[in-house]
Amino acid sequence: MTLDLFGELPPQMTIEHLMDGALVLRQFALADSEALVAEIDQVAAVSPFRNMTTPGGHAMSAAMSCCGNLGWVTDASGYRYQSEDPESGRPWPAMPSIFQKLACRAAQTAGYQGFEPDACLINRYQPGARMGLHQDKNEQDVTQPIVSVSLGLPIVFQFGGLVRNERPMRVPLAHGDVVVWGGASRLRYHGVLTLKAGDHPVTGACRYNLTFRRAR
Ligand code: MD3
Ligand code: FE
Image (cartoon, rainbow, N blue to C red):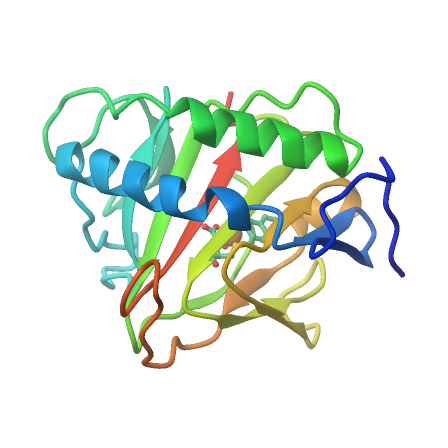
């Protein structure tokens, strides 16, 4: 199913309804993509990408950084949001205003008014990196959506059910695609398959994913 809530989306942009509250805004971030990657570089100059360790003791294959008032971290003691980068003990970099504006516009386009993220997790995938099926449930109010922005190399996203054993659907995500995950989709299991090698004109040999969250 496709819809155009405002009747004024740029011509290359399309909207796909995935399932219960999850909308793919194809190429919604395309026009901003170079500016977004420049801001990622600025954030990473202060809070460099790192491979965090899960409570089970495994290094994640995606490298992460964060910006905004809160950042998501994992270590031996668990998963949580906190206001300081654990590597430096300093606050995370502020959320760039183009990040905030894009996330708010995307949420509004998907029918969520007044989305004000306080956390942006930046995942960097290099070839071979993946993210296994998991739920995002460290946020206080799961009636708030999550907005995700894909930049650079394409990947296959997996979207499962509310229990881990349900077979996931596969959705390709490419440069500039934005997905808004709300409603009943908010607590679905999800992950991404292994990134294949490639070279992208904007990001080079990697994929970035921004996820905007209301953590508190
Ligand atoms: C569906 N990231 O950071 S983005 C994550 O591509 C994460 O880096 C993946 O899963 C990535 O937690 C997937 C799409 C996504 C993000 C959050 C969701 C889908 C979601 C939360 C609930 C349901
Ligand atoms: Fe997730």
